Length: 455
Image (cartoon, rainbow, N blue to C red; front, side):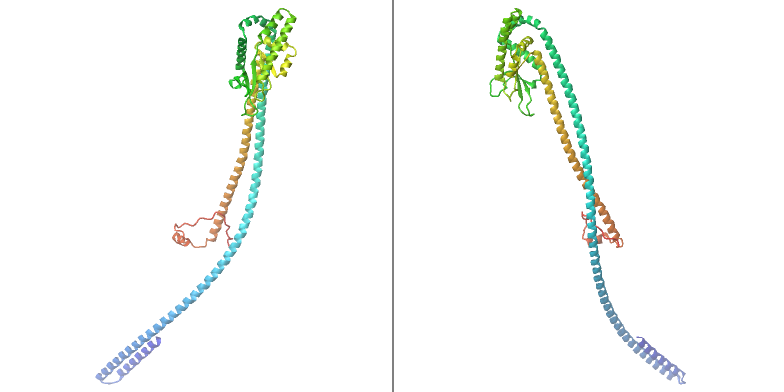
Protein backbone atom coordinates (compact mmCIF):
# COMPACT_ATOMS: atom_id res chain seq x y z
CA UNK A 1 0.00 0.00 0.00
CA UNK A 2 2.82 2.39 0.84
CA UNK A 3 4.66 1.47 -2.40
CA UNK A 4 1.59 2.31 -4.47
CA UNK A 5 1.30 5.68 -2.89
CA UNK A 6 5.03 6.25 -3.40
CA UNK A 7 4.80 5.39 -7.14
CA UNK A 8 1.81 7.65 -7.59
CA UNK A 9 3.66 10.49 -5.88
CA UNK A 10 6.73 9.96 -8.07
CA UNK A 11 4.61 10.12 -11.25
CA UNK A 12 2.94 13.31 -10.12
CA UNK A 13 6.32 14.81 -9.24
CA UNK A 14 7.67 13.92 -12.74
CA UNK A 15 4.69 15.56 -14.38
CA UNK A 16 5.16 18.65 -12.29
CA UNK A 17 8.86 18.81 -13.27
CA UNK A 18 7.95 18.45 -16.95
CA UNK A 19 5.38 21.19 -16.54
CA UNK A 20 7.96 23.47 -14.97
CA UNK A 21 10.47 22.83 -17.79
CA UNK A 22 7.87 23.68 -20.39
CA UNK A 23 7.03 26.85 -18.63
CA UNK A 24 10.68 27.97 -18.71
CA UNK A 25 11.15 27.35 -22.42
CA UNK A 26 10.69 30.50 -24.56
CA UNK A 27 7.94 29.40 -26.95
CA UNK A 28 4.87 30.85 -28.31
CA UNK A 29 1.85 31.16 -26.11
CA UNK A 30 -0.40 28.79 -28.07
CA UNK A 31 2.09 26.02 -28.23
CA UNK A 32 2.74 26.27 -24.56
CA UNK A 33 -0.92 26.11 -23.76
CA UNK A 34 -1.35 23.03 -25.89
CA UNK A 35 1.56 21.34 -24.28
CA UNK A 36 0.26 22.27 -20.87
CA UNK A 37 -3.19 20.96 -21.69
CA UNK A 38 -1.65 17.78 -22.97
CA UNK A 39 0.49 17.52 -19.86
CA UNK A 40 -2.52 18.11 -17.66
CA UNK A 41 -4.50 15.53 -19.55
CA UNK A 42 -1.62 13.11 -19.27
CA UNK A 43 -1.30 13.99 -15.58
CA UNK A 44 -4.98 13.34 -15.09
CA UNK A 45 -4.80 10.02 -16.90
CA UNK A 46 -1.74 9.08 -14.94
CA UNK A 47 -3.33 10.03 -11.67
CA UNK A 48 -6.50 8.18 -12.57
CA UNK A 49 -4.53 5.10 -13.52
CA UNK A 50 -2.41 5.38 -10.40
CA UNK A 51 -5.52 5.91 -8.29
CA UNK A 52 -7.19 2.88 -9.84
CA UNK A 53 -4.04 0.84 -9.32
CA UNK A 54 -3.85 2.14 -5.80
CA UNK A 55 -7.47 1.17 -5.10
CA UNK A 56 -6.97 -2.30 -6.56
CA UNK A 57 -3.83 -2.75 -4.54
CA UNK A 58 -5.56 -1.37 -1.49
CA UNK A 59 -8.45 -3.81 -1.92
CA UNK A 60 -6.10 -6.71 -2.42
CA UNK A 61 -3.98 -5.71 0.52
CA UNK A 62 -7.11 -5.21 2.67
CA UNK A 63 -8.41 -8.64 1.65
CA UNK A 64 -5.07 -10.18 2.52
CA UNK A 65 -5.02 -8.34 5.82
CA UNK A 66 -8.58 -9.49 6.67
CA UNK A 67 -7.73 -13.06 5.66
CA UNK A 68 -4.57 -12.98 7.76
CA UNK A 69 -6.49 -11.47 10.67
CA UNK A 70 -9.18 -14.17 10.39
CA UNK A 71 -6.55 -16.88 10.34
CA UNK A 72 -4.80 -15.34 13.30
CA UNK A 73 -8.09 -15.04 15.21
CA UNK A 74 -8.94 -18.66 14.47
CA UNK A 75 -5.51 -19.75 15.61
CA UNK A 76 -5.79 -17.73 18.79
CA UNK A 77 -9.29 -19.15 19.40
CA UNK A 78 -7.92 -22.65 19.12
CA UNK A 79 -5.04 -21.75 21.42
CA UNK A 80 -7.51 -20.22 23.92
CA UNK A 81 -9.75 -23.31 23.78
CA UNK A 82 -6.78 -25.55 24.43
CA UNK A 83 -5.64 -23.36 27.32
CA UNK A 84 -9.17 -23.41 28.79
CA UNK A 85 -9.32 -27.18 28.45
CA UNK A 86 -5.97 -27.54 30.18
CA UNK A 87 -7.05 -25.13 32.93
CA UNK A 88 -10.34 -27.02 33.40
CA UNK A 89 -8.50 -30.33 33.64
CA UNK A 90 -6.07 -28.89 36.16
CA UNK A 91 -8.99 -27.37 38.10
CA UNK A 92 -10.80 -30.72 38.17
CA UNK A 93 -7.68 -32.44 39.36
CA UNK A 94 -7.17 -29.82 42.05
CA UNK A 95 -10.84 -30.06 43.10
CA UNK A 96 -10.58 -33.84 43.31
CA UNK A 97 -7.53 -33.58 45.51
CA UNK A 98 -9.29 -30.96 47.66
CA UNK A 99 -12.34 -33.22 48.01
CA UNK A 100 -10.11 -36.14 48.96
CA UNK A 101 -8.39 -34.02 51.61
CA UNK A 102 -11.80 -32.79 52.81
CA UNK A 103 -13.11 -36.36 53.06
CA UNK A 104 -10.05 -37.40 55.06
CA UNK A 105 -10.34 -34.42 57.38
CA UNK A 106 -14.10 -34.96 57.67
CA UNK A 107 -13.58 -38.60 58.67
CA UNK A 108 -10.98 -37.65 61.27
CA UNK A 109 -13.19 -34.94 62.72
CA UNK A 110 -16.24 -37.19 62.69
CA UNK A 111 -14.29 -39.84 64.59
CA UNK A 112 -13.16 -37.21 67.07
CA UNK A 113 -16.74 -35.99 67.51
CA UNK A 114 -17.97 -39.55 68.06
CA UNK A 115 -15.32 -40.16 70.72
CA UNK A 116 -16.07 -36.80 72.35
CA UNK A 117 -19.80 -37.56 72.27
CA UNK A 118 -19.19 -40.97 73.85
CA UNK A 119 -17.15 -39.41 76.63
CA UNK A 120 -19.78 -36.75 77.27
CA UNK A 121 -22.58 -39.31 77.23
CA UNK A 122 -20.64 -41.41 79.72
CA UNK A 123 -20.24 -38.38 81.97
CA UNK A 124 -23.95 -37.56 81.59
CA UNK A 125 -24.93 -41.15 82.41
CA UNK A 126 -22.66 -41.13 85.46
CA UNK A 127 -24.13 -37.82 86.63
CA UNK A 128 -27.70 -38.99 86.04
CA UNK A 129 -27.03 -42.27 87.86
CA UNK A 130 -25.57 -40.41 90.82
CA UNK A 131 -28.51 -38.03 90.95
CA UNK A 132 -31.01 -40.87 90.60
CA UNK A 133 -29.30 -42.76 93.42
CA UNK A 134 -29.39 -39.64 95.56
CA UNK A 135 -33.06 -39.10 94.68
CA UNK A 136 -33.91 -42.73 95.46
CA UNK A 137 -32.05 -42.55 98.75
CA UNK A 138 -33.85 -39.32 99.65
CA UNK A 139 -37.21 -40.82 98.66
CA UNK A 140 -36.46 -43.94 100.71
CA UNK A 141 -35.60 -41.81 103.74
CA UNK A 142 -38.77 -39.76 103.33
CA UNK A 143 -40.91 -42.88 102.91
CA UNK A 144 -39.28 -44.42 105.98
CA UNK A 145 -39.97 -41.24 107.94
CA UNK A 146 -43.58 -41.25 106.74
CA UNK A 147 -43.93 -44.91 107.71
CA UNK A 148 -42.51 -44.26 111.17
CA UNK A 149 -44.86 -41.31 111.60
CA UNK A 150 -47.86 -43.38 110.53
CA UNK A 151 -46.81 -46.27 112.80
CA UNK A 152 -46.34 -43.92 115.73
CA UNK A 153 -49.72 -42.30 115.17
CA UNK A 154 -51.43 -45.67 114.77
CA UNK A 155 -49.65 -47.04 117.84
CA UNK A 156 -50.63 -44.01 119.90
CA UNK A 157 -54.24 -44.20 118.70
CA UNK A 158 -54.40 -47.94 119.36
CA UNK A 159 -52.95 -47.56 122.86
CA UNK A 160 -55.39 -44.78 123.63
CA UNK A 161 -58.38 -46.77 122.35
CA UNK A 162 -57.29 -49.95 124.15
CA UNK A 163 -56.74 -47.98 127.35
CA UNK A 164 -60.22 -46.51 127.06
CA UNK A 165 -61.64 -49.98 126.40
CA UNK A 166 -59.87 -51.53 129.39
CA UNK A 167 -60.97 -48.65 131.58
CA UNK A 168 -64.53 -49.11 130.40
CA UNK A 169 -64.31 -52.87 131.06
CA UNK A 170 -62.95 -52.20 134.53
CA UNK A 171 -65.78 -49.81 135.25
CA UNK A 172 -68.31 -52.35 134.03
CA UNK A 173 -66.71 -55.09 136.12
CA UNK A 174 -66.89 -52.83 139.16
CA UNK A 175 -70.53 -52.30 138.38
CA UNK A 176 -70.94 -56.07 138.12
CA UNK A 177 -69.36 -56.57 141.53
CA UNK A 178 -71.60 -53.89 142.93
CA UNK A 179 -74.54 -55.66 141.40
CA UNK A 180 -73.45 -58.92 143.00
CA UNK A 181 -73.55 -57.14 146.33
CA UNK A 182 -77.16 -56.22 145.65
CA UNK A 183 -78.32 -59.79 145.05
CA UNK A 184 -80.62 -59.73 148.06
CA UNK A 185 -82.44 -56.72 146.69
CA UNK A 186 -82.79 -58.37 143.32
CA UNK A 187 -83.94 -61.60 144.98
CA UNK A 188 -86.72 -59.65 146.67
CA UNK A 189 -88.12 -58.82 143.24
CA UNK A 190 -88.16 -62.41 142.04
CA UNK A 191 -91.82 -62.69 143.00
CA UNK A 192 -92.69 -59.84 140.68
CA UNK A 193 -90.55 -61.41 137.97
CA UNK A 194 -92.35 -64.73 138.52
CA UNK A 195 -95.68 -63.09 137.96
CA UNK A 196 -94.45 -61.44 134.75
CA UNK A 197 -92.75 -64.50 133.33
CA UNK A 198 -95.53 -67.07 133.59
CA UNK A 199 -94.45 -69.37 130.74
CA UNK A 200 -91.44 -70.40 128.64
CA UNK A 201 -92.39 -68.20 125.71
CA UNK A 202 -92.57 -65.13 127.88
CA UNK A 203 -89.21 -65.92 129.50
CA UNK A 204 -87.58 -66.40 126.09
CA UNK A 205 -89.11 -63.23 124.71
CA UNK A 206 -87.97 -61.22 127.73
CA UNK A 207 -84.41 -62.58 127.38
CA UNK A 208 -84.38 -61.81 123.64
CA UNK A 209 -85.62 -58.26 124.24
CA UNK A 210 -82.92 -57.60 126.82
CA UNK A 211 -80.26 -59.17 124.56
CA UNK A 212 -81.46 -57.09 121.59
CA UNK A 213 -81.25 -53.90 123.66
CA UNK A 214 -77.68 -54.63 124.71
CA UNK A 215 -76.53 -55.51 121.19
CA UNK A 216 -78.26 -52.52 119.57
CA UNK A 217 -76.69 -50.16 122.12
CA UNK A 218 -73.16 -51.48 121.59
CA UNK A 219 -73.00 -52.48 117.91
CA UNK A 220 -73.90 -50.99 114.54
CA UNK A 221 -76.46 -52.76 112.30
CA UNK A 222 -73.66 -53.88 109.96
CA UNK A 223 -71.82 -55.63 112.81
CA UNK A 224 -74.50 -58.15 113.84
CA UNK A 225 -77.34 -60.21 112.42
CA UNK A 226 -80.75 -61.24 113.81
CA UNK A 227 -82.45 -64.61 113.30
CA UNK A 228 -79.84 -65.93 110.88
CA UNK A 229 -78.63 -69.39 109.89
CA UNK A 230 -74.96 -69.51 110.88
CA UNK A 231 -74.48 -72.98 109.36
CA UNK A 232 -75.31 -73.02 105.61
CA UNK A 233 -76.59 -76.64 105.50
CA UNK A 234 -78.59 -76.44 108.74
CA UNK A 235 -82.08 -75.10 109.44
CA UNK A 236 -81.12 -73.93 112.94
CA UNK A 237 -81.75 -70.21 113.45
CA UNK A 238 -79.88 -68.30 116.13
CA UNK A 239 -81.43 -65.23 117.75
CA UNK A 240 -78.40 -62.97 117.38
CA UNK A 241 -74.89 -63.34 115.91
CA UNK A 242 -71.98 -60.92 115.73
CA UNK A 243 -70.54 -60.53 112.22
CA UNK A 244 -66.75 -60.92 112.43
CA UNK A 245 -64.58 -60.16 109.37
CA UNK A 246 -62.98 -63.09 107.54
CA UNK A 247 -59.32 -63.61 106.82
CA UNK A 248 -59.52 -61.80 103.47
CA UNK A 249 -61.26 -58.43 102.95
CA UNK A 250 -63.75 -59.90 100.43
CA UNK A 251 -64.34 -63.28 102.15
CA UNK A 252 -67.57 -64.36 103.86
CA UNK A 253 -67.97 -63.23 107.49
CA UNK A 254 -67.52 -65.46 110.52
CA UNK A 255 -70.47 -65.47 112.95
CA UNK A 256 -70.29 -65.38 116.75
CA UNK A 257 -73.63 -66.93 117.94
CA UNK A 258 -75.36 -65.44 121.01
CA UNK A 259 -78.46 -67.19 122.39
CA UNK A 260 -80.53 -66.09 125.41
CA UNK A 261 -81.53 -68.81 127.91
CA UNK A 262 -83.48 -68.49 131.21
CA UNK A 263 -84.03 -71.72 133.28
CA UNK A 264 -86.73 -70.09 135.43
CA UNK A 265 -88.04 -73.11 137.42
CA UNK A 266 -84.60 -74.31 138.54
CA UNK A 267 -83.55 -70.76 139.45
CA UNK A 268 -86.76 -70.14 141.44
CA UNK A 269 -86.33 -73.39 143.41
CA UNK A 270 -82.79 -72.36 144.23
CA UNK A 271 -83.92 -68.92 145.45
CA UNK A 272 -86.73 -70.44 147.51
CA UNK A 273 -84.36 -72.95 149.14
CA UNK A 274 -81.90 -70.17 149.95
CA UNK A 275 -84.66 -68.01 151.44
CA UNK A 276 -85.88 -71.00 153.48
CA UNK A 277 -82.34 -71.69 154.72
CA UNK A 278 -82.53 -75.25 153.37
CA UNK A 279 -78.96 -76.29 152.50
CA UNK A 280 -79.93 -79.65 151.07
CA UNK A 281 -82.71 -78.17 148.97
CA UNK A 282 -80.41 -75.38 147.82
CA UNK A 283 -77.75 -77.95 146.89
CA UNK A 284 -80.25 -80.05 144.93
CA UNK A 285 -81.67 -76.95 143.21
CA UNK A 286 -78.17 -75.77 142.31
CA UNK A 287 -77.35 -79.15 140.80
CA UNK A 288 -80.59 -79.07 138.81
CA UNK A 289 -79.78 -75.54 137.65
CA UNK A 290 -76.32 -76.68 136.57
CA UNK A 291 -77.77 -79.62 134.63
CA UNK A 292 -80.32 -77.35 132.91
CA UNK A 293 -77.65 -74.82 131.94
CA UNK A 294 -75.34 -77.59 130.72
CA UNK A 295 -78.18 -79.11 128.64
CA UNK A 296 -78.88 -75.76 127.00
CA UNK A 297 -75.15 -75.32 126.38
CA UNK A 298 -74.95 -78.69 124.61
CA UNK A 299 -77.94 -77.72 122.47
CA UNK A 300 -76.37 -74.37 121.51
CA UNK A 301 -73.02 -76.01 120.70
CA UNK A 302 -74.61 -78.68 118.51
CA UNK A 303 -76.82 -76.26 116.58
CA UNK A 304 -74.77 -73.08 116.23
CA UNK A 305 -71.02 -73.84 116.57
CA UNK A 306 -69.66 -74.93 113.16
CA UNK A 307 -66.22 -73.54 112.22
CA UNK A 308 -65.18 -72.05 109.83
CA UNK A 309 -68.67 -70.60 109.29
CA UNK A 310 -68.81 -69.60 112.96
CA UNK A 311 -66.33 -69.07 115.75
CA UNK A 312 -65.21 -72.09 117.74
CA UNK A 313 -67.40 -71.00 120.67
CA UNK A 314 -70.82 -69.47 121.31
CA UNK A 315 -72.22 -67.21 124.03
CA UNK A 316 -75.14 -68.17 126.29
CA UNK A 317 -76.80 -65.00 127.57
CA UNK A 318 -78.40 -65.15 131.01
CA UNK A 319 -80.81 -62.18 131.34
CA UNK A 320 -80.29 -61.51 135.09
CA UNK A 321 -77.16 -60.83 137.06
CA UNK A 322 -78.43 -63.10 139.89
CA UNK A 323 -78.78 -66.08 137.58
CA UNK A 324 -75.35 -65.37 136.10
CA UNK A 325 -73.83 -65.18 139.58
CA UNK A 326 -75.40 -68.48 140.64
CA UNK A 327 -74.12 -70.21 137.50
CA UNK A 328 -70.60 -68.93 138.15
CA UNK A 329 -70.87 -70.04 141.77
CA UNK A 330 -71.57 -73.67 140.86
CA UNK A 331 -68.29 -75.63 141.13
CA UNK A 332 -66.97 -77.16 137.89
CA UNK A 333 -69.83 -75.85 135.75
CA UNK A 334 -67.79 -73.10 134.13
CA UNK A 335 -65.08 -75.59 133.13
CA UNK A 336 -67.64 -77.99 131.65
CA UNK A 337 -69.19 -75.15 129.67
CA UNK A 338 -65.75 -74.16 128.39
CA UNK A 339 -65.19 -77.76 127.30
CA UNK A 340 -68.46 -77.55 125.38
CA UNK A 341 -67.13 -74.29 123.80
CA UNK A 342 -69.84 -72.19 125.45
CA UNK A 343 -69.23 -68.95 127.34
CA UNK A 344 -71.92 -67.67 129.72
CA UNK A 345 -72.49 -63.95 130.10
CA UNK A 346 -74.76 -61.77 132.15
CA UNK A 347 -76.05 -58.31 131.15
CA UNK A 348 -73.03 -56.43 132.50
CA UNK A 349 -70.47 -58.96 131.33
CA UNK A 350 -72.03 -59.17 127.85
CA UNK A 351 -72.03 -55.37 127.56
CA UNK A 352 -68.32 -55.34 128.38
CA UNK A 353 -67.64 -58.08 125.84
CA UNK A 354 -69.62 -56.24 123.15
CA UNK A 355 -67.72 -53.02 123.85
CA UNK A 356 -64.44 -54.91 123.58
CA UNK A 357 -65.55 -56.37 120.24
CA UNK A 358 -66.56 -52.90 119.07
CA UNK A 359 -63.11 -51.59 119.96
CA UNK A 360 -61.57 -54.55 118.13
CA UNK A 361 -63.60 -53.65 115.05
CA UNK A 362 -62.29 -50.11 115.23
CA UNK A 363 -58.73 -51.36 115.68
CA UNK A 364 -59.13 -53.64 112.66
CA UNK A 365 -60.45 -50.73 110.61
CA UNK A 366 -57.41 -48.68 111.64
CA UNK A 367 -55.08 -51.53 110.64
CA UNK A 368 -56.83 -51.89 107.29
CA UNK A 369 -56.52 -48.15 106.74
CA UNK A 370 -52.84 -48.30 107.67
CA UNK A 371 -52.40 -51.10 105.12
CA UNK A 372 -54.10 -48.92 102.50
CA UNK A 373 -51.85 -46.00 103.44
CA UNK A 374 -48.82 -48.28 103.09
CA UNK A 375 -50.02 -49.43 99.66
CA UNK A 376 -50.44 -45.79 98.62
CA UNK A 377 -46.92 -45.03 99.84
CA UNK A 378 -45.57 -47.98 97.86
CA UNK A 379 -47.42 -46.76 94.77
CA UNK A 380 -45.99 -43.26 95.33
CA UNK A 381 -42.50 -44.77 95.60
CA UNK A 382 -43.03 -46.64 92.33
CA UNK A 383 -44.26 -43.47 90.62
CA UNK A 384 -41.21 -41.60 91.95
CA UNK A 385 -39.00 -44.17 90.27
CA UNK A 386 -40.89 -43.73 86.98
CA UNK A 387 -40.64 -39.95 87.38
CA UNK A 388 -36.88 -40.20 87.84
CA UNK A 389 -36.59 -42.34 84.70
CA UNK A 390 -38.74 -39.89 82.70
CA UNK A 391 -36.66 -36.98 84.00
CA UNK A 392 -33.46 -38.71 82.92
CA UNK A 393 -34.93 -39.37 79.46
CA UNK A 394 -35.96 -35.71 79.08
CA UNK A 395 -32.52 -34.60 80.27
CA UNK A 396 -30.85 -36.87 77.73
CA UNK A 397 -33.07 -35.58 74.90
CA UNK A 398 -32.40 -31.94 75.81
CA UNK A 399 -28.64 -32.52 76.01
CA UNK A 400 -28.68 -34.25 72.62
CA UNK A 401 -30.68 -31.42 71.01
CA UNK A 402 -28.38 -28.79 72.53
CA UNK A 403 -25.31 -30.65 71.27
CA UNK A 404 -26.74 -30.92 67.73
CA UNK A 405 -27.61 -27.20 67.66
CA UNK A 406 -24.09 -26.27 68.78
CA UNK A 407 -22.52 -28.53 66.16
CA UNK A 408 -24.78 -27.04 63.47
CA UNK A 409 -23.73 -23.52 64.47
CA UNK A 410 -20.05 -24.50 64.28
CA UNK A 411 -20.60 -26.04 60.85
CA UNK A 412 -22.44 -22.92 59.62
CA UNK A 413 -19.65 -20.60 60.77
CA UNK A 414 -17.03 -22.81 59.13
CA UNK A 415 -18.95 -22.89 55.83
CA UNK A 416 -19.34 -19.10 55.89
CA UNK A 417 -15.60 -18.72 56.44
CA UNK A 418 -14.92 -20.99 53.45
CA UNK A 419 -17.37 -19.06 51.25
CA UNK A 420 -16.45 -15.51 52.24
CA UNK A 421 -14.28 -15.08 49.08
CA UNK A 422 -16.99 -16.37 46.75
CA UNK A 423 -19.01 -13.75 44.94
CA UNK A 424 -22.73 -13.84 45.69
CA UNK A 425 -25.26 -14.24 42.83
CA UNK A 426 -28.87 -13.22 42.62
CA UNK A 427 -31.61 -15.32 44.24
CA UNK A 428 -33.09 -16.25 40.83
CA UNK A 429 -29.74 -17.52 39.53
CA UNK A 430 -29.15 -19.42 42.76
CA UNK A 431 -32.60 -21.03 42.46
CA UNK A 432 -31.95 -22.11 38.85
CA UNK A 433 -28.52 -23.42 39.73
CA UNK A 434 -29.67 -25.39 42.79
CA UNK A 435 -32.88 -26.62 41.16
CA UNK A 436 -35.22 -25.01 43.73
CA UNK A 437 -38.20 -23.26 42.12
CA UNK A 438 -38.95 -21.24 45.27
CA UNK A 439 -35.51 -19.66 45.49
CA UNK A 440 -34.80 -21.27 48.91
CA UNK A 441 -31.89 -23.45 49.83
CA UNK A 442 -32.65 -27.07 50.74
CA UNK A 443 -32.87 -27.95 54.44
CA UNK A 444 -29.76 -29.06 56.26
CA UNK A 445 -29.52 -32.73 57.25
CA UNK A 446 -30.38 -33.79 60.79
CA UNK A 447 -26.91 -35.25 61.50
CA UNK A 448 -24.19 -32.65 62.20
CA UNK A 449 -21.29 -32.44 59.75
CA UNK A 450 -17.75 -31.29 60.44
CA UNK A 451 -16.31 -28.51 58.28
CA UNK A 452 -12.79 -28.61 56.80
CA UNK A 453 -9.99 -26.46 58.15
CA UNK A 454 -10.00 -22.80 57.13
CA UNK A 455 -6.88 -22.64 55.04
